[in-house]
Image 1: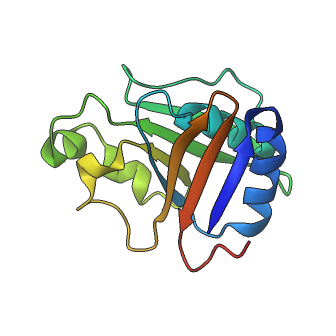
Image 2 (image 1 turned 30 degrees about the vertical axis):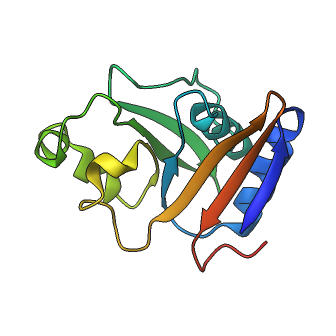
Image 3 (image 1 turned 90 degrees about the vertical axis):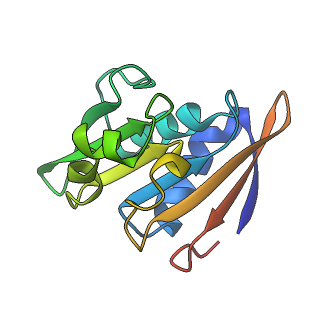
Length: 144
């Protein structure tokens, strides 16, 4: 499925994404500056995350919390830009996040393609122009 998202409507796109998307692990592909972190932040806000969010480029993993159904749940945000290979990712605890049963957003997933769960939802973000992005979602569980 493909969606053209004007940046001034990114929060609405995130809300729709959560209504339509199944899955727990989401792999985000796109060039540097395409808007991966921006969309992930909008997805977290739509879930009700209240803590500060940002790119975990240097920490590799950020953990956020949201409340749903009266219970707290974790969201893991992984930025693998600085990871050299899958062995380094394993040593950093990436697999623990991917298979935790919690929502997990992965930037630069191509660096760990062999570690991703089979049911990962693949999301590609491309720049159309300064104000719009093209989202391509590749998963049979997403029904737009």
